[in-house]
Amino acid sequence: MRGNVAPESGLIDMPLGKLTQGRSWKMVPDKSAPAAVTAWAVAGRGGAETWLKLHPRTGRTHQIRAHCAALGHPIIGDAIYGGGAGPLMLLARAITLPLDPPLTATAPAPAHMVAALRACGFA
Image 1 (spheres, one colour):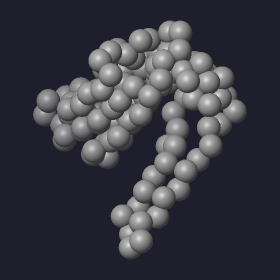
Image 2 (spheres, rainbow, N blue to C red; image 1 turned 180 degrees about the vertical axis):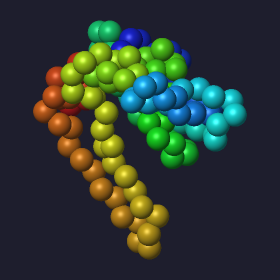
Image 3 (cartoon, rainbow, N blue to C red; image 1 turned 135 degrees about the vertical axis):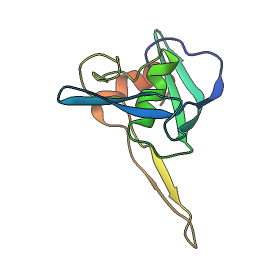
Image 4 (cartoon, rainbow, N blue to C red; image 1 turned 30 degrees about the vertical axis):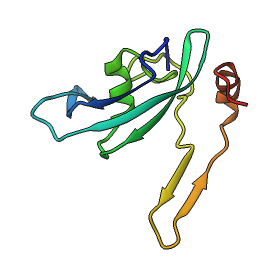
């Protein structure tokens, strides 16, 4: 994320609705829209960037991107929600499916994210 996020963790409970402008659209806070909830915690800090672990509790389109922007800390590289141009620094690092037995998959960080993650304490 851009900036130094404080406090160390939180919960964003902000309904999101679709805003269409011409031929483009994005999700924006909208009290009349369906619920959108994201839990988050700081995983590391480095310079003017903060690495967050984000856990969406609902599944709205662009939920994580819109919620981070609403916090005032857009995801780096997110041209739609204010994080600047460039490759989007958003990764579904791990997912666990509640099967019997549970199935977990993890993904390595892509090359364009490695330096920023290291600066935030990710080895």
